[in-house]
Length: 242
Image (cartoon, rainbow, N blue to C red; front, side, top):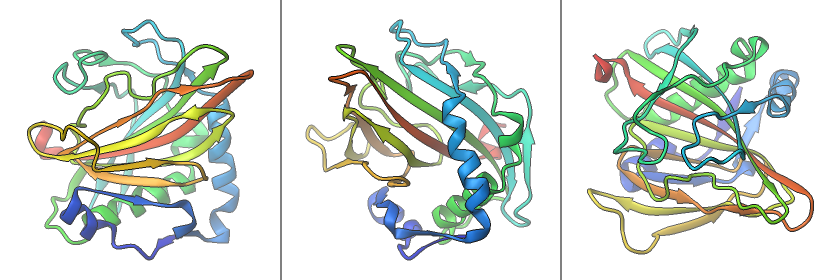
């Protein structure tokens, strides 16, 4: 079981995003083993082959689930691709991307299933919601090497097209940068960020809805190799895709 004392749904309604430090979360002992196994996944991600800037610094895996809001039933959708329009993602959008799938053991990992249901409940607890949702799970590592800059969001300041998104920091090692900027909601982003946050500790997290403009600064490493590991979980009503 995962718990948090912050009313995430209410803050999303008020400000369209919320930052939640990792120490605010509590995890039951029953999840410890599956959580440890899940964190090891980031050592076995595969290159993102769809980097239009030619970058080799992004590793990832992707999986899709269908979630019933009424029953909590979670079903994996095998062979799913990920699509963003060129308007949403000018650099890497406009094509169906076939990322490496979640590892077989990850698909049924109890910690991942609990996290999906937890995030969904916190994001939607105060809203009228439809029953069927699609849930995208993105495991991402951004790698920095000495003298080479790596971009967590090469498309720059942008909005995501999904109804809600949760992002959790898994690890941050031997890097500078990787700072989150939130520019507010609306048709155009604010000129200056309304909030700035650097995730530094395990499970430092933020949540936002599709109106939120945001970006993440590049990461650099001054000596050897470094990386920034995150999981993105996005939620979209199935009816939006019909």
